[in-house]
Image (cartoon, rainbow, N blue to C red; front, side):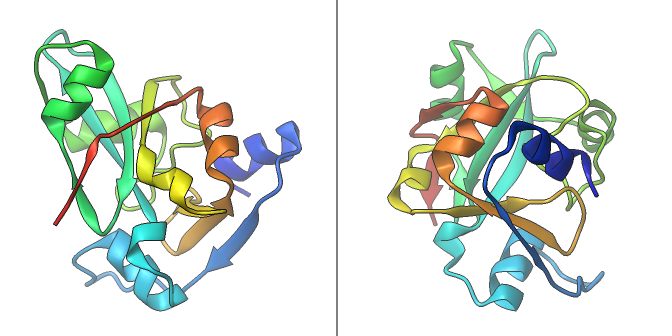
Length: 157
């Protein structure tokens, strides 16, 4: 189906797919997913890419109900400064289109950080690799499959 689902199938990780009709006019892909699936936005996580001063791309997975704290992510990653990655660089590196970037099954293995709030839920939702497709899985399985570390990298709006 998508590289994300293929990775989970190969690893025999339990997950559920949730589809919804994506509206191209939606302002926020993550908020749209939460609304259309009737989910608490704190349980739906967005995948954001950042870039270090040296050009290293990092993946941050944070609730759609909040924001990424770049300083907290920089601290967790052991770097001085971060900025949001160039959208084209994010698409090239992950193999996914914006609005459908999954933390799972990316073309290049990038250091990944998941906000600690993911551990508050039995399962969380992340992009399945295309707009209108969400994967529900345990946060620990997400961390294992992305080789991520948990950190306090999100801020509540």
